Every structure is written in structure tokens, then in C-alpha cells.
Length: 211
Image (cartoon, rainbow, N blue to C red):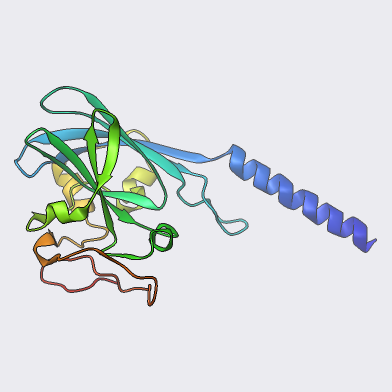
């Protein structure tokens, strides 16, 4: 009898997992992003929720992408990302297109705990390529991209929502709390697993560390 009950429970658990994976939630929205020079770029965003979660709890974020047209060339550019790399700022200057992202979850440990916990990518002929964040040294960058749909509660309620510049900027502050990221504080990005735990140094202007 006990063996039968165990078998039933296992089958029920597998069925629940199957239902969850089959009903992965997806949200789509667009957001107007203001660049440092004042130009506005519209990003089309897509986020799926198929990540790990507790039993009977909704799945967490899994994969997503953002897409936009280059304001000068009209070229369509897309960035595909996973739950542990979240966009922070889109930077387009002098025909150079960069994306600043922040590391989350296990990516911090897989990358040997970089401090500050940012990565920088540049778009070129062969797609996105990582480059040293030291290339931003001396700049002060304001987060202009929504990192997660949870930053804007209405995204989770209304599919295909559009956010104008004002709404995007009001919500694009999940990691910076409205502070600029001051790369003037940056010397060299370090990698050290020992003591890899919050608070991490996000180089926030007027603030040393952020929990």
C-alpha cells in the first residue's frame, strides 16, 4: 500500500511539472529608452517564465530578448539573454552600440564574483562581443532599460504594453535606485570568490555599496 501511495505521489509531481512547463508564462512589451544624447530608441521586449521554483509556486524568469532599430543605420539589433544576465543600460555613441548588463543568480559565481558585478557587450559585424568594463572608465551612466518586468508591475498584468520614456525611466531603477553608475570610481574589475556575498559594489553615485 505504501509503495502504491509513493508511486501516485511521484506521478502527481511529474504531472504538475509537465503542466507547469507546458504553461510557461510569457510577457511582451515595448519601452522607449532615452540615450545619453537625448535620442529615443524603442525596445521590443519579451520575457519567459520557465525558471526554477518551489512546488505550487509560479516559475521564475528564464529566457528573454530585446530588439530595436539602430537610430542611425536602421539595422535591427537583438540581444538574447538568460535569467542571470539582466540589461541595465543601452549605450549608442559615435556608431558604437553597447549594452551594460548586471550579473544575477549563479552567473556571479560562474564568473568568479566580478566586482563590480557588470558585464559590457559591444555590437559589431559578428554580433555581440564582450569587452572590458574598463572601457567605461570615467563615465557616469544612468540605468535606462527595464531589467526585469517585475520593475514595472503593470507589465505583469497587461501583455503588449507600451511604456514611454517617462514611464520607462521611472521604473528602470531596480539596481541603481535612481543613482547613476559612476565608472569614475572604477580602477580595475576584480575577480575574487572569497567573500563573494552581498552587499555588492555597484559603483553608485553618492553611495559606496548596494545590498
